[in-house]
Length: 467
Image 1 (cartoon, rainbow, N blue to C red):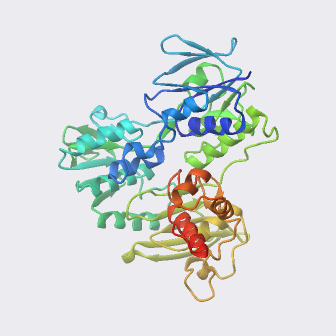
Image 2: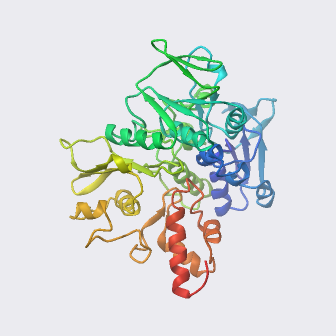
């Protein structure tokens, strides 16, 4: 019997274990998790900070699942070494677990800037971090969030939603500079201002004190609570110590194998074709490929890379960014619309007649259509304005369940199409919760909830039943 050991019981590791069990009931599976808790959806941590979800609501697998599926889960156990000669992993207490196949899903860790007083701040990375942030927020008179990337924006919005004055500090010239161009960053900043978040860009934090931070130049920014959202780095030390090839991440091929053929790596710790992916959808795509290979369900399975769509999960802020958003008119056709007073910015980047990038900030019905075009690499319609404004005469509203093709991908995180949702509904899943349980739609970032609810509601209307 094949002995599969998974190091890491986060989103990638937990998904791999469930994918393996869906294909093979007999393979022996052991999974080690450094955190002393059941796996949870890290993407939804900002909702916990905002108070819109409780910790139990973001759990991925119940404890009973492991017993029901004959999986040995060892939470709170840090693997400290890989003995490649004997094919065994070693935990901090000296225990050894042999393997035939080893999968590293060690994830990432928060980057803590090397500034004096950093120990006074709370990183924003784990559920324990969230609970520490919430505990401090109960008595704080103000908060400072350091880092204006995706996590920083979500943390700042969540704290502001609790009524706390928040200042968001960012080193770069505009927010979320990896995903957004300067104009989109400015519109996002103005949107956050309306929601109670004061933003400072182009600033350097030199010290963190008991009641705020000191910037380069001596300016003090007050806040009893300081949250660090300065990015993450792949956890690669275990692999490097074992002699595996490591660059930014653990280097893997299209089978997601390391240079040791018995060891795979997936998720945020893995580097595939020079890229380390920091989003959930690639990790889950990788988990499916490894599950196919390990169980023999599909020995031809390969991972070819992912097309990234970033969704901001902050209440009252609608944002989707994808692909090459920083290209200019010199490199591609760029279609842009901005209405700062309404917090709206829309941008399409088109090359060779296909969508290679887009930014959609502010409420818009175009998100579904644009995301489908980007994901499928389909030709862009000649009516560019109709694509940005689906309500215009003659524009096809692909977000409508009636017009959306069955092949349209509704849930990006789990690759769930409208056709799969329809088939699930026709098989008896007659409400949103049942569809989510059967297809896994909405269990990633949650950004597809409105679309799934719309499809299920439309199907129920056709049959005259209640959703």
